[in-house]
Image (cartoon, rainbow, N blue to C red; front, side, top):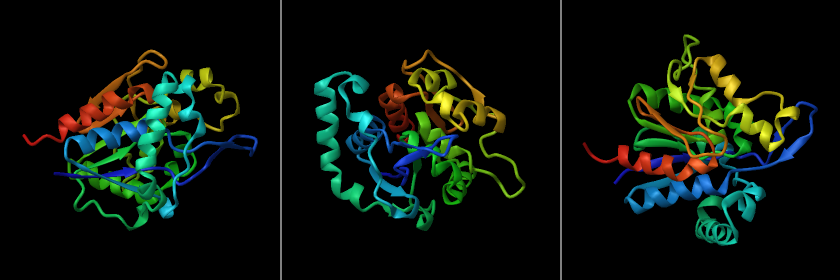
Amino acid sequence: MARVLVVLSGADHWTLRDGSKHATGFWAQGLVAAHRALSAAGHRPVLATPGGAPPALDPISLTPGAVGGVGAARELSAYLGGLSRDLALPLTLEEQTLAGYAAIYLPGGHACMEDLVESAALGRLLVEAVDAERLVTVVAHGAAGLVPAVRADGSWAFAGRRMAVFTDVEEELGGLAPGAGWLLERRLEDLGAIIDTGLPWAAHVVTDRGLVTGQNPGSSEAAATQTVELLRPA
């Protein structure tokens, strides 16, 4: 039915305030939920990264404690195994155009804070998507990819939109806030986002004018379901 551009970080770390590198990558649950829901609905998820770099998996995202048990961790790992070829050979983000894609999807992971936040190519695609009224979905730290969506006149394409993002409180609870050079919720609020906050770690999804946002990894399935629903023909 529709092709969906799924943008993953090409980084394997997030640089903290002191210059140290926190090992990270994409979040397994975010990608699997998106890929599975889109594929089941007959859509074609297409993976792309900055520079076409094979994306790194955040190892924490496959630990039983992070995903709800050993069974869930094994299921996620098995699904990712089926995506091994696509993950090894993602498309180059800088070479993509909006033509042919019905939506852009950013599944998240702390690595987005390293490279997607500065990706001019992603910013260009997102501005074009907003102008063309294409669907955009971001989950958790995937919202960092919204930062570079700046128009030629300097305005931010998502100013005034309600959105759920990984909160500063959740970053504090996760232990990385003290060493972070910047925090996502505050950064987006400064750009003009209207942050709609749910309880820490609870599923919370907000939809506003073609932008679907999930607050945290636990929101992955609900965000994917909402995306599929909005991609249905009118």
